[in-house]
Structures are given as structure tokens and as C-alpha cells.
Amino acid sequence: MPSEVDALDARLIRLLNEEPRIGVLECARRLAVARGTVQARLDRLQARGVITGFGPQLDPAALGYAVTAFVTLEIRQSRGHDAVAEHLVAIPEVLEVHTITGSGDLVCRVVARSNADLQRVIDGIVGYHAIVRASTIIALAEQIPYRVLPLVEAAAAVAG
Image (cartoon, rainbow, N blue to C red):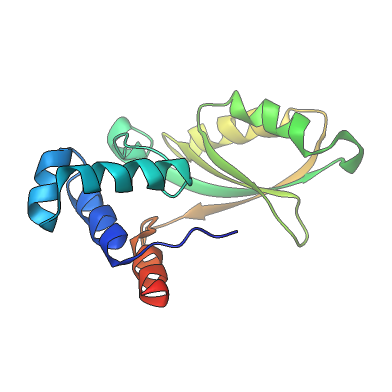
């Protein structure tokens, strides 16, 4: 069942999104609520899985991985998705993997240092016996970065 967020939750999440290092006391001050209210909201949002972490957001390009690509994989169905996922999780350049519908079975977001390095990454991916075929699309520019805040605000508006 989806977790509802209200207007205060949305304001708190926006504040944490804009200033991830802000403390609970400062959140309370800026939101004009008690510190205990902020802490209780944070605890509840974490327990319900709405907030999944407070780690830093990293830019792969700043780490030297300037190429981003999306790789669609077709796998041997008899082997299942989990075994392939175990293979993929061992490759540091594989940032995320999703089971999909359509002509492929999995889609991966990967990064590489260069196009030549991307070939190395893809070779590492398809070198696994349960992967039948890969199709790669290289991203040229990021138009909209990964974001969730508009969903939070839309959910709060519906709940409110």
C-alpha cells in the first residue's frame, strides 16, 4: 500500500533535499514546528520506506566516469534474473538494474571512463553465460536528472 505524505512531510523532504546536511533542530526552526515533530516525521518516513537514505549524491563524471549508457540485456530465462543480478552487482560500473517488459529482460545504467572503456564494461557484462544478448544506447546529455521531489509534492497535494 502506498505511503501518504502530507504538506509538512513534503516541506521536510524538500528542505532535506535542498540542504542534506541540515540538522533536525534547524529543520524544526525553519519549518516552525517542534524538534520532536521533525524527528517523529523523519522516523516515520524512514520506517515506511519513503526516505531510504541520507548519503551524499555523487556525480560519476566527477569521479572520471564521463560516459553513461543504458544496456538492455536478454537473458536465458531458465537461469532466472537473480543469478544475472548477482553477476552484475560485482561490476562497479553498473549503477542500477531493473527487470523490464518488452524485447529485453533487464535494463542497466552503466558508466565508463570513455567509449573504449565502455567496451570493457560491456564485455564484462555479457561475459556471463546466462546473458544471451546486449543492446547499448549511449547517453549524450542529461536533460532531467534523477528526481523524486515532484512526486512527493504531487502526493502531498493529493493527500492534503
